[in-house]
Length: 378
Ligand SMILES: Cc1cc2nc3c(=O)[nH]c(=O)nc-3n(C[C@H](O)[C@H](O)[C@H](O)COP(=O)(O)OP(=O)(O)OC[C@H]3O[C@@H](n4cnc5c(N)ncnc54)[C@H](O)[C@@H]3O)c2cc1C
Image (tube, rainbow, N blue to C red):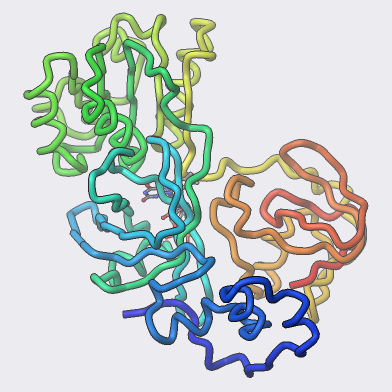
């Protein structure tokens, strides 16, 4: 099954001969010039969507659905894939009801995986567009858009001797990748894997985690259950005693944390209280509410043919409120899926406070608010 938008919607036009002569320097350049304006990949995908010249894509080769509910996908990337560092994320794009949707996912596999494939575990969120679609529809043979890996949440090189990995719920994926990578490297230092789930049944990768801990004396698995009194090692919500219990040396070693916002906040508070926040590295799956100054919103925002009164929210939210469906991925300014051209007007980046006044510049809709009249090429 191929999920990429087929070519049939766009009429084929060929490039003028002069432009072909100018650009033709190699057989590939000649073919690409002939394929203008669509690009060779648009033609090749009619034959085989995995046969691409420029675009990075991936074919689903394995699908495993688990309670949770979540789905674990194995993906074979096209030859453009440059690999990833344990902890980083990729952006997956699928076409759902004719609209291309992108979302970020953190590979859970080792960065040294022998067959070069990627493993993603996606939790299906209630009302979640992409996660539910993947849970319901992903089958071997599905071809999806893929980005190169990105993000600074990654194990450093050389590896720290002691490492504390903390996760909760679906936030297990990037730290699972770190654990699998360290094990593949024969890391000899202490690794504590502290994971929180509501109950034992909610813990992804549990048999493998237990097997790794059993086979490696330097790996300690500590399971915290927030809604199950029996079993596990810790019970109830995170507190400082959990850290002292799981990794008494935590104030002297780097920690990598990914989980639901309340867990992230509690761990951050603990590190801040001890004055050791530099040791804590974090990855957010869900955007924190942006502090948007909407008190003095003025002007109007144009999205193509749609004109709305500026209500002070981010451009992404204002476009969605107007019934439009611009592409987005992370909603927190890290994946650039929502980048669009601002034709005119002034916008403010709510993360940095920078104001952009130049016309015809690319901006990220999810973290930009209009300052007065703005025209977006959507
Ligand atoms: C760097 C990064 C890495 C990520 N890695 C993974 C991963 O490995 N596995 C994984 O399952 N997800 C991961 N995510 C989250 C993922 O990108 C999507 O946000 C998630 O799959 C929901 O997308 P959706 O289209 O189904 O939901 P949307 O249609 O975008 O949202 C629908 C509803 O779900 C809520 N929602 C969205 N995401 C979450 C969330 N994480 N927790 C609680 N509520 C949420 C929204 O607030 C909204 O109300 C990652 C996100 C980032 C930024």
